[in-house]
Length: 118
Image (tube, rainbow, N blue to C red; front, side):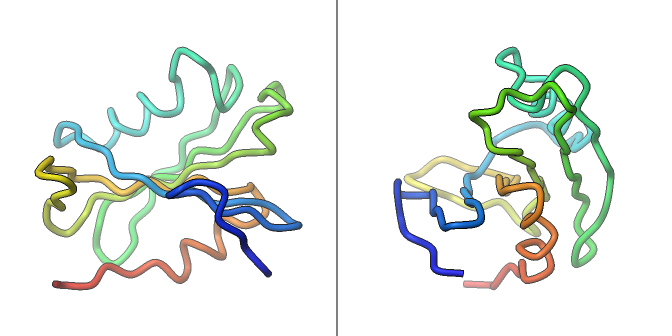
């Protein structure tokens, strides 16, 4: 896939998109996932599905949209995982990583996700 940068954290291609960010939130990943899934703007529709998982021994979740997700969101799906240790970006601490991607691409991206120690 040939991706082109459309914003500092967003890339798009013929078959979809991906975007990354960091979240600063409490220690309960279930709450973090619920807050994202049921955001007041309803980016995943009115009945998103949250699937708890784990990657590299870190708690994580997928958020899949319901059938009434707004069309302009292009089947946006999310993956949230707790960082192995907090990350600092411009002097702010973040403890979760979030990936948004097209529903058909999310598993491929997640399968290649790895955190490196710096």
